[in-house]
Image (cartoon, rainbow, N blue to C red; front, side, top):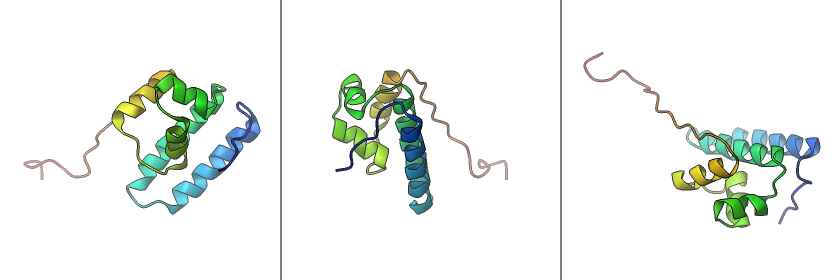
Length: 106
């Protein structure tokens, strides 16, 4: 298991960004969305100087669940994202944008 870099350092943020770039480069069309969320969670956590364990305690989940989310191992449930957003004092915004015109407008 990989050891987490010291919390709140510029080095930790740089490392998170590099891992995010690597993850985004490997994902399919649907996976980029979850990789982007994982990156945002990790960056917000580090900026707030929280360890994965501390964030997990604030969310009522396990450190391993936070690690899986941040590594892109598993897409998070919406209720989990809401708890994480609340713990990080962030607003969770989900938006549906039509890819095609609705029927009748074609």
